[in-house]
Amino acid sequence: MNLMRRKSSERSSVVSESERQCGVRVMGESELVRVRVSEAERLSEDALFWVRRLVATLAYKAEALELQKQLRHIQSQFDMHTGQALSLIQGRRARVAATSTVNGHLTDLDDSLSARNLEVENEDLLFILETIVDKCMNTAEAEDEADDPGALAAVGCLRAISTIL
Image (cartoon, rainbow, N blue to C red; front, top):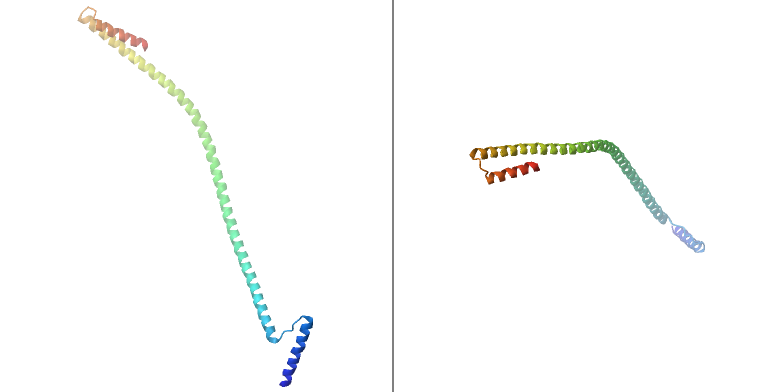
């Protein structure tokens, strides 16, 4: 056993010499196990990184697909609403044109009806005034043949009004 210790100590002294000369260190078994564990940890960290990256990429792709689906739906709705708006606008243009035409005719009809109403009212007023004048004249003649200044003034006013009308 002493012999093995001595050989191992000789080897470590030799290794130490060679390490110093070459700048390279030769590892023992325990050091080699530590290196393997750290390499495994590093490899598992790398693997974990790539798995996480893959999961994130898949999540982004799924989200992109969902957004594309929503975009297609929105585009189809936009196309549908655009068609409806265009048909409403075209119908509206026709209604505006019809309304403009009818408004012109309604204005003409309103003017002619107003003129006709004035004619009828004037004729009615004229008839009423003539009737009043006749009644006043008949009443004045029946009461006495003398000229009543009030009756003459009333007849003059009524004739002036009928002339104006």
